[in-house]
Every structure is written in structure tokens, then in C-alpha cells.
Length: 175
Image (tube, rainbow, N blue to C red; front, top):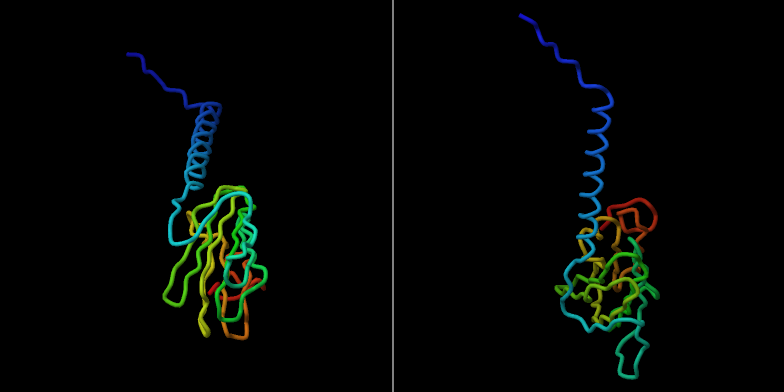
């Protein structure tokens, strides 16, 4: 009786399988990232799209420019006094973004903005209240797209620096 011996798989076969697995992993990651960009819009806000709206005669409160980039929020000027503010959010990034302001028992957000789009959001900020300002789209907040506004306090706003803790200095609690 002849004995059949199997030859071990060659390293070439293993490399080919590794490349196929790597290619499939890359394709799955690309599909996941493409799906993440389409977060739902909605919420309570007055919204508009491109170009950035100019302040109108009927606009109320102080205008605050909110630049949304990948994955950072910059507010200018930084609100720190109570009153009505109109946030003009513009998506200057390459991914969909939105602006949400949460605090004082209220939660307001813009629609989801495609790159280049803009929207306005008018809110009344109350004295002695801290507000979380962030992008609610698909985990962007966890990627550092957040900041904090303290009204009537001594700290003003804490700018987002993209490092995930939201305080501009590279240290802290991230609120």
C-alpha cells in the first residue's frame, strides 16, 4: 500500500490568502465609512443651505459663526453672556456634519449639512448654565468634534481642539 503524503501549503498560498483577507477588510472599512457619512438630519432649528446666510434685518440676538471641519468646531465670537444667539453653522469639512447645542433643559440642532452647506440655529442661552456644543453625526463627538459654553461663568467657551477632550489645552475631562 502506498502512502500519500500531503505537502504543506506553500508560503505563496498563505500570502495570497492574506492579501485577499486584507482586501476584503479594506472594502468593508470603506463601505462602513461611506455609510457613516449619511447621519439623519432633523431636530428643532431654522435651517438653510449653501451659501452661508447673511444676517438679515429680522435676525435676533448676537450672531456666532460656527465653523465645522473634520473633526473640530470653532465658535467666533465665543458666547459667554446670557441672551439670544444665532449660530451660523458652515460645514467646511469633507464629511457631513451638524451642530447641536444641549443644556439648560433644551436641545437644539441643525439639519445634517453636506460639505459646503450651512444652516442657522437660534437659541437663548441662560445665565449660570453650561452648554455642550457638538456634532451629533455618527460618532463625530467622540472624535473630538465638541466644545463647551459656560454662560455667566468665568471660563467663556472651551474650544474643541480635535484631541477628544474639548478643552483646547490638551488636558482635562472633555466635559
